[in-house]
Image 1 (spheres, rainbow, N blue to C red):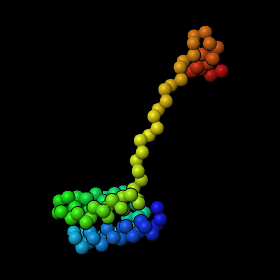
Image 2: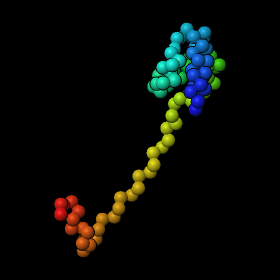
Image 3: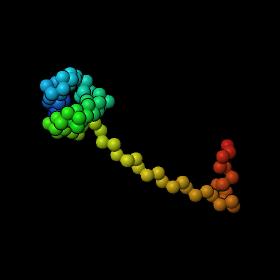
Length: 98
């Protein structure tokens, strides 16, 4: 992501939100704060759905793709190592100090 691309997307969304909904946003804060960017994207989607402002959706998606990190599923947890057999000498020290 280029910083210029992020500012351009934020500025375009800002202008359209101001014209269509009267909502004023802060483009610099949008680029530097992920939570604020997510709130603006959510607001734009809500207005698009409720007021039929479909032109907001591509800008919201663009901003989201540039600024909001993709949440990847965490790596699967590996199975725990098997316990030592009772006759195994390493089993004596489990849970005790030497």
